[in-house]
Image (cartoon, rainbow, N blue to C red; front, side, top):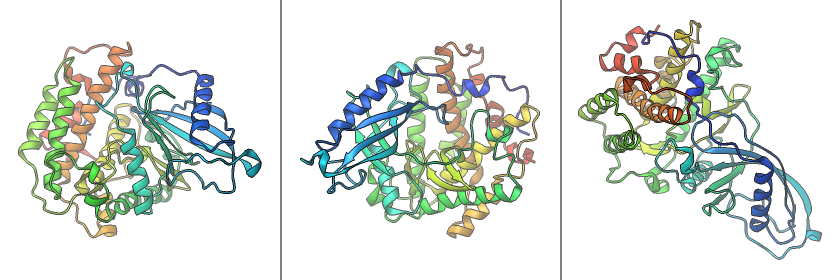
Length: 407
């Protein structure tokens, strides 16, 4: 395998530094007041069941809540457009319950993982994907750019029931995924690749999602990739601005910038954070695709390689922990073959895109570890590259030995 040594006992928690917990009662009141301003006069909303789940992800804050209000006969379900106030009264309608989720932009005091969050953009991506494809995304109801209600911008979407492959502990350490049959895991694997194929088939992404086009990026996969690399270097410089630098990350960036593969195929709509931990499943089929903050226009392989690499990341951790993992699950050749079967597109340069995925993850982990150190959850190592949990993977990818070691 690509990694040696011993994984820290708290590796998963280091990857998920805590933020200050809000008071659910205060949140309940704030959301109820906010809803009253969004709904028609006489809606009289009540909010209950507010909770902050220990969910996958390390960026936006998630708030689950239930809301009930009186709907008038003229009311449409919220979602297609921001709700409009009317003069309807409570006598016109009936009380109806709604199961909702708010995703809230992190505050500066929480030392955010990314330099900026645009909740309106995430909201627009979800709405666009829902309207232009059959990718299962929650209905996006409202986007609120005013931070008054919750202290930061947020959006509200429907809550969908399903099961997510856990990050803590990783699903391949022991979970409903590892306990499933090989056939069930194959169903999940193929259906997850199908999500990418359907997303990448969204028509005219440059027109419908032009707001995701990076500065100076052209319409081709290669042109968009060069813009992504420039942004990735900027992200690293931001992450390292107030602390140590990583020679390993800088070597990866130099290699990637010097070896950009030629590709004149059109850029497609990419999910960005395309991993199974961001999908809710029911009977091993996707019912909700979540977390769109990394959505972009780019090469198809960028999404596929990210999905493959994030599984490899967990597999390498399982090896360090002395666990069998899931070596027959989400193998690179199987994933690429399935994608080609669905789309007709032969995935090229997966070694390159795998290194890019590992580099992106390394930069995020570098920032996350800096957060953990700032929160007192970890000690500053003597070698900054040791802040990257998958350092040996990156080193093996750079010297071209990683994939030959994968069983």
